[in-house]
Image (cartoon, rainbow, N blue to C red; front, side, top):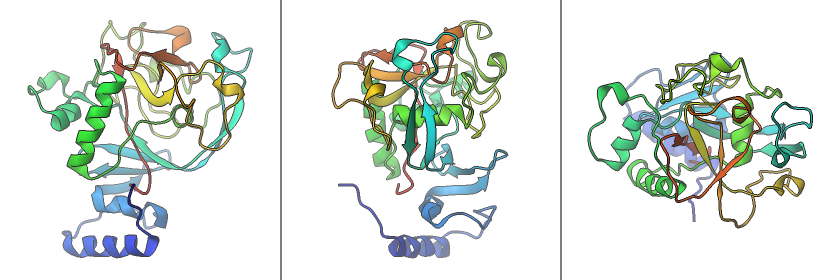
Length: 280
């Protein structure tokens, strides 16, 4: 069972950490909500990003953005160009607050957790590709042992909310400005964070590499999806992927587009990003 600290104990732990830690301006804004205080134990810096959302630089090198709890309309309307049947019906979804990776997991971070050959300097900031869903489960277990934190993949609902960044349109900006895709990638991945972010300050939510989600795929799931924190069908054969990749374009790079893949399959354009619950 995941250990939960009551608020009073969390604050005591935090106070002990702050006494032991060297003096430095960890939090750049004193309005950090109490429910986010635990992240301070594991962060080098916490501040609000230009979009107004809390951003934490963790000591393991991961940068994460806090997306508050709230609702959005999931799926695509019937008149959206390129829409596919499994993207409907449009339905209301409420997701809890989460920390999510500002960037896709890079080759450097993957190597730091999993070991292996050193990453070439020119590849350090590229997203980690060639990973299956099953590979990622091994990575998450190794990362938990190293960090003591319960990182996970986003649910499909969390992913779409984070991708939209508050924008109900098919894209959160002009495609060439926000995504590495078939029309501008030269058939290869590019360093993360080199295109414009969305309204939450997240980069590469569309393009660069496809991103695995935790849900089993169900082509009619939206018709029965719960409003509160949907997690997908209870069983299945294929897992959800989102966001499109550097080999794809057009209809594939939309916030509502859904893809499904065999969880044992890996390809150069298959990657992921991390999620962390506020309780850590």
